[in-house]
Length: 250
Image (cartoon, rainbow, N blue to C red; front, top):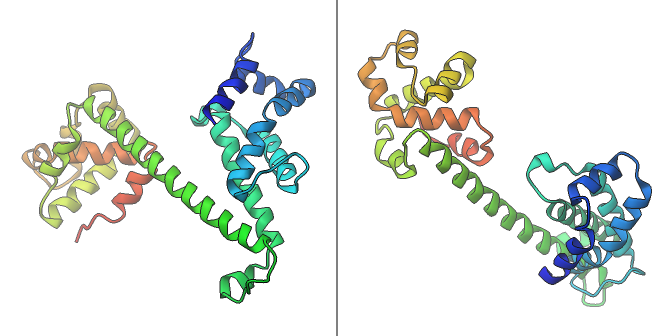
């Protein structure tokens, strides 16, 4: 797989980068689109094969579905979202092939367990595709969760906070934890206050103290925890925000 992708990128590593070529395609360069699709046909077939668990050629319906999905991925791709065309199109192809296999199988019979050994093979393909897609989603989610935590750790270092500090310095009592979260929420939602945090790398304690009936000492004691929660709430942290929903505050 790595060799194949290396060859693909080598074929397109001339004057423009792949992102620049995609930009030209999205602006209407049909000849370049056809050239890109032609070069990526082995990748499309390989990706479709990984879902179907069988060898796929350009004469198979699954390949045609993958081809359409890759073309759609070109139109929808944006490098600003932080992923490569390879990763984005792989998701699109697998999703479309699985949808195709679903439509070709007798889904209700499969889910109820009524399929007999003599039933057509597409039912088996659908089950394999479901498992392949589920496994892929789990792996992708684990990778995104790991990347998000690493990104958060890097941001915390800007405030001289280690990830391990949050465990040691989290408020032990529920009322103190609830107050800290409320302070962090106010901090994250106020453009003026959060700008102070971002620019000066410290809490605007005086301003927060005037808004809450807590002492400066209390805010300073929970400084690391408040900063961490505020960074999560004001940043692009999907999984960490979801984790906060489960933080007990009562």
